[in-house]
Structure formats: C-alpha cells, structure tokens
Length: 31
Image (tube, rainbow, N blue to C red; front, side, top):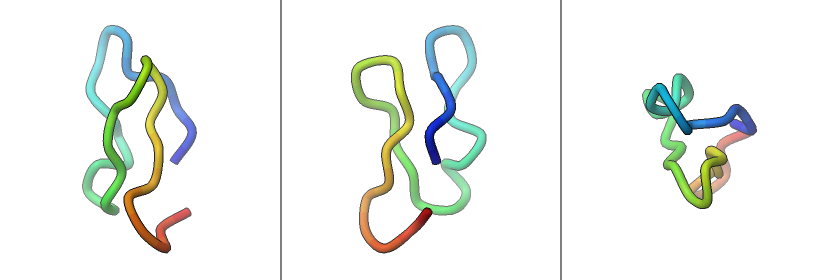
C-alpha cells in the first residue's frame, strides 16, 4: 500500500488495503 487515494481509489485495494486520510493503509499483513 502507500499510494494516495484523493482522486482515485486505492489501487492496492485488491490486496486488502483501504483509504484513510487520503492515503492507502494495509488492513492486516499486507504490504
């Protein structure tokens, strides 16, 4: 994860990441 999600949703959402404070964070043990 780690990309921004201001305009577009998280690209890493398919890997279990979610948007928080305009930045994508991992939900569990996902990088």
